[in-house]
Figure 1 (cartoon, rainbow, N blue to C red):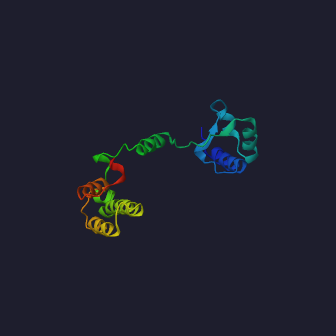
Figure 2 (figure 1 turned 90 degrees about the vertical axis):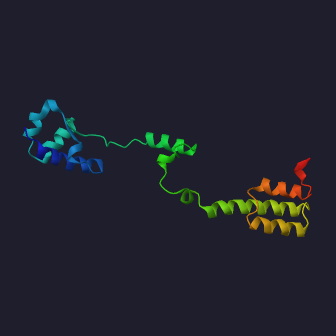
Figure 3 (figure 1 turned 90 degrees about the horizontal axis):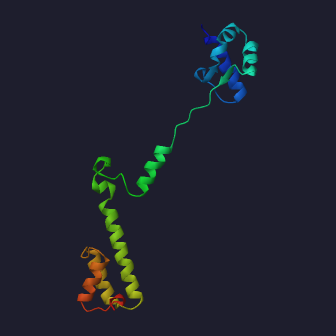
Length: 158
C-alpha cells in the first residue's frame, strides 16, 4: 500500500509544528493503522492522524562523541603517537628551530639568574653566553658542569 504522498504531507506539517526540518524518512506511521493513513488524502486528514498519534516524527539521531572523547583522553596522556600514527617527519613534528629556541632560552635564563645573584662576573657571563650561543652545551646541566670544571662555585653544589 502506497503512503508516499501521506508521508510527504506529514513531513511538511511536522516541520511547521516542530519548527525544524522533518524529512520524509523521519515520519513514523503506526503499522497497525496503515489503511487509515492510506485513505487520508487531504492535509486536514493528516493533521487529525498526527493529533491522534498515528503519525509521529522520529527523534533526530545524533552521532556519539564517546569514542572521540576516549581517543582525546588517551592523546592527552601521550598515547597514540606511534610510528603508524605519524604523518610528518620528526623535524616537522618538533622543528629543529623550536628545539633550539627552547634550549637557548632556558640556558640564557639560567645565565641571567647566575649573573643576578653574582655567581658569575660580567666577563664570565659574557663568556658562557657566547659558548651557549655557539651550541657548546647540550643542556643546562651540561653548562653548569662545565662551569664547575672551570672552578665556578654554584649555589646548588653543597
